[in-house]
Amino acid sequence: MAKSKPKQHPNALHLTVASVPRAVRFYEEKLGFKMTEAFPPEKPVWANVVLDGQAIMLGELPSLAEAKQFGMDQIEIELVKQDARAMVRGSPGVGVSYYVQVKDVDAFARKLKKRRLKPLLPPKTQFYGIRDLHVTDLDGYRLVFVSPAAPQADAAAPPTGA
Image 1 (cartoon, rainbow, N blue to C red):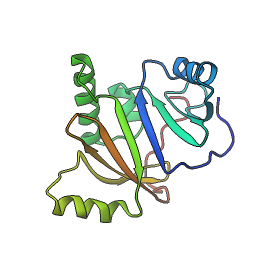
Image 2: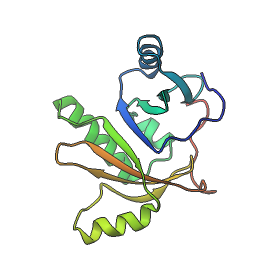
Image 3: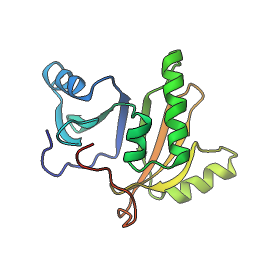
């Protein structure tokens, strides 16, 4: 399912879905989106689909074993557990993350701290080359502020057969 190097989009909506392959088929066949990337290529649990330069990321909520395989630390795993419990309850906003590009995630985090807003997770450089900061709005929707970053040499990249 993987395709060529994707064009980066400044903003992207992330939707938690039951099955990424099923969701990709729907977005492509019914809505006219094109998949630009998927991870892992063999059996994707995450994909990016684009329509007229607008991106939507589709992802499955990982199991605890997958979260560990993907290199999530304990704070991130606790957040996965929290999301799983909220999804069972049917809470509004659960499973929806809106990615917003900012110039410098760390500077943005300092602004939030001055405004007395505590993020869900501290800024972190991900293995795939972004630095992110997670915040929840009043309705439970997650805003993920991101800046491009060089991938960490010591960051745990998920295995390709996951």
